[in-house]
Length: 204
Length: 266
Image 1 (tube, one colour):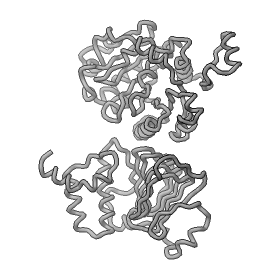
Image 2 (cartoon, rainbow over the protein chains, first blue to last red):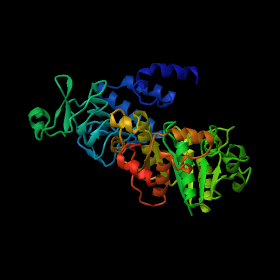
Image 3 (cartoon, rainbow over the protein chains, first blue to last red):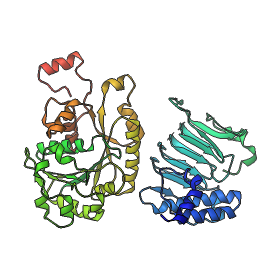
Image 4 (cartoon, each protein chain N blue to C red):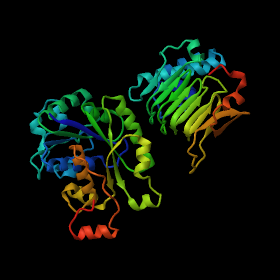
């Protein structure tokens, strides 16, 4: 590892901390990313960061990444949150689903698995992994699961984690969303969306 | 034409090698032609567990590099003439062979055997890729511990990504007492979590330690509970329907009566 690369890595340490499992990203890539990020606006910054992260992943054969978008994202693709994909499998440890729109999983999300969506996340099963809804800045995104016990739950810029120690969640569908700046989890009630999210009915 | 199984776990120390040795020996007891392959190059153990350590002349790396013929490297078991071991090299490391060589090797081995069983090293790096390259089916071994189950989940994900479909699970080292008191995950918890088919359960058994140290697989010992469990597992591999064994040890009036009458309690 040469010195230039080492410096680049140092500058990027805030970013690598975010990464799971010490993934190897080429030094040059990190440097380019940082330069690119400095030039971009807040929203597209998130988008590029995500796309860079995922294209870097793509090269690493050992980590199966389920990438449902073309490698080269256009700005419109990243911002579009109208589309929804259906994932008919269990997301296991080390696997990752990323999609700029909504994600529906028919299966479980196990610990160590990640679902990142620009829109909402709905899991017809148990959610034990990491959820990031509204990853491109959509603050009114929701995460819903038949059994919601994520190790970490992020909505747009808000992050919460599971309480330390033993805890049990009721065996009932639950929904997480942001209210007054904090992530709340409550029992899912059909039709509840209409009351809480009047300003963005058509969206997703 | 045989089938190639890989026995894998991700985490170390959950009993891959013990499981390989016992399933292999038990299949050989049933009369099948079995080849056990130690894919843990650099940290070979399977030969020790089988008690064949001092017979090794050539190894897997020699075969892969064409330094000897396959037949020269295969070691016949002391007890069963239809059980063979292909040992790993101890002086090399995992990079000494590549997945293509392993594929060729497996194709060659399965021509003349009913079962080829590969002992996979811990981890998900080159050793894992080598071991799974030639395999058609996978047996995932785990223990009822959160860390082991987590790693098994990761491994199942990686197996799904390769060409191996529908891996099955062996849950090893179950302690009935701890499960009863709620201090250990029970079978249902693990199955619910990993969502794959269960091939068998194996109780935690001190006789395993004795048998591995002696180089005598536990399946040869008719008193060993773990040995009984492995015999059941190998019968299931061969296609028999065998109910899961009852892990309640000793206790129970009926069990004692059965034992007195010489009936199997498992």
